[in-house]
Image (cartoon, rainbow, N blue to C red):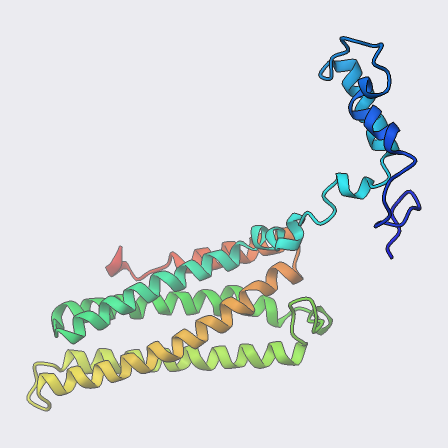
Length: 255
């Protein structure tokens, strides 16, 4: 049976000290001659509290030993890893734009769909550039020992394999979106009927969407958390500045 701080078994009933503990909480219980002593008087309350805390055999029950500290929630890592929140927020914005694009293609509203496709292509391109120039080099250039294989980090080989996979995804997205742009421009030509071209564009768009969802999940569940586990706050802040700078560099036609 567990033993408490006082040496008494944690489950044992209090017998000998009960009177003293009652006296600490209610001094009138065994000294009724002291009529009129206020339980809430400052001096009396301080003495009773001190007596209670120093003599109580179950001191560990008077405190909250199981209270979860902030670091157990992972808050400090997330608070200092602004790279994670910045890029994840951009993922959400891009997903909304992609859904709107698919909706316009399904109508089909070709002119509006082309505008949204052009914007999505540009937005995804700067997002990819932000990762390729700001985040990925920082993760690639750290010593291999930084990837410990524990505490939320992969091994160095696993990390490099993931980064290679993400870069391959980036190439796929840009290639497919470029083909979609080319096909959408040709909607009015006689080579294909508009509906055939729309269906082809939607097929490519769904392929991009499916792969992008898995891609984003991998980044958000793993890669974006690595900077907060590897680097100190100034280094994370530097990566964040680089990423933010690239995200803001949309082509002039969207300014």
